Length: 78
Figure 1 (cartoon, rainbow, N blue to C red):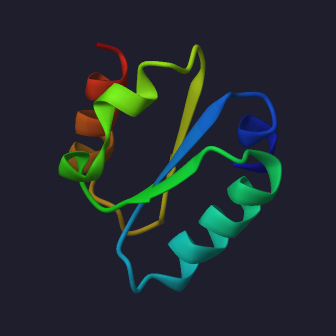
Figure 2: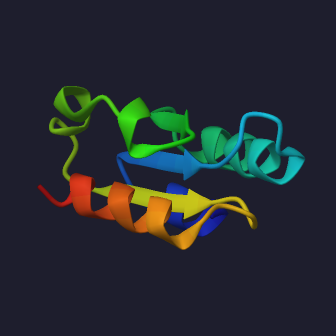
């Protein structure tokens, strides 16, 4: 996550609000990329804001369901 977030214009961290694993991922990414977003589901994404970025990285907490990660990935590719 640290390496990816140091190479992209925006970073999305997916996971539960009370997950310490996801919070640590967010902190690591935020230190590398100012445009880091902590979301729980695709519904939390501001797609209009993300359109201004050419490169977006995605990471997720260990317990984040695969389908949620895939939904976010799909939305970011639009």
